[in-house]
View 1 (tube, rainbow, N blue to C red):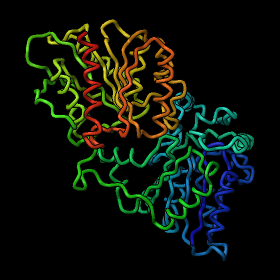
View 2 (cartoon, rainbow, N blue to C red; view 1 turned 120 degrees about the vertical axis):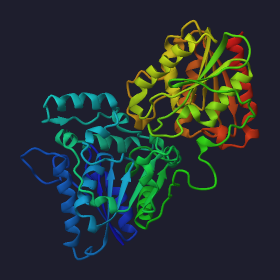
View 3 (tube, one colour; view 1 turned 90 degrees about the vertical axis):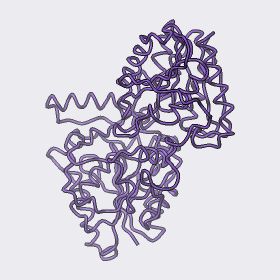
Length: 510
């Protein structure tokens, strides 16, 4: 059996693992939550500054203590890092790689050598503030813990009961800034240690989404497809040790046994990845006219003509090839628009990370200006059509719709930042500004089998739109999944695609 050494995230101590540890022990294992110096009252006493290296040493001490106990000597050690805790876990595993059988990433990022934990703070505004303090040399002090109603800025609290959340708040401790500012140092030995990722779906992380990122062909993600890497998914928020300790214990036992889902390497298998599969409708082979990051598909005949600009979703890795404007779905939509007599447009924008929405919005605005300046385009009759994670980009157009914008459309959009994105306070929140859109026509293709986290953002937007003067046309795909054009049977999607396109074309030509 294994010994599980578990390290909690910011502000929290070993107490959060109590229920999970009990389940692991009941299953025959041994389990220890590490009391981190300067955070956990049960941790080592110190009078000096506390940094990430201090916590690395705390975890190393826990590893070394295993062999000092006769009942656990020689057992395999599984290190579990939640949130910030993955940083000291990796630092310790790198120095004790021969004693660690597996590292479990519990709803956290993938820290890299030389990068401080500050980079992993989900709240983008707070991260920027702390980065300014670090650059100014203000590296001492602490970050105060959240209040009862503020934990959502650090991750979804889905599934955490009121009593557990109050206990989490009452026992929370200030986080020493040195633990966030000090870079993680890895010599490389940890790369040989098997790993398991445990994703919490209600926090916005799912195995299928990770697979899609791998399918984009980014070399940086290729390591996730190696045989020693596995994944599990829990239908809960960011604190599974509080919301579902039984299920978490089962997952940790499975991870220790080498179980879990394996990702498919990019380009592997008989079927093409979802984003490269054929468009479900037959469309004419309208030639592409490329201008920088923008491709126009112009129908034959005299102009100028209205245009529909198709804005891809994301985040999409910068190294994805082919780039989104060449994906069959986007090209298919653009050529379908051309078949209806309007100019279809695809473009590439720089939404490579959830922190990139500002520059992606700038890219889209620049692309629209380029399209409107083309003599073949009627600059006063433009529609914008957004997809997936690009849905947040409709915000600016809703808040200040120009006279030439005749319609906004969206397919299976994400219409509010997901909890793990750390975008609390961001302007990119369509439901909050839809009442400013006036009578602007909106066409929304809604996937009936959308993930609950994304569906909730769509429902909130539809509700807000219902209380506004915007003219919302809902086009449902009852059995459709996210990205239904290339995932679901064509007969399930074709009627909705035709109806939505004709609705948008009617708005720009009428």
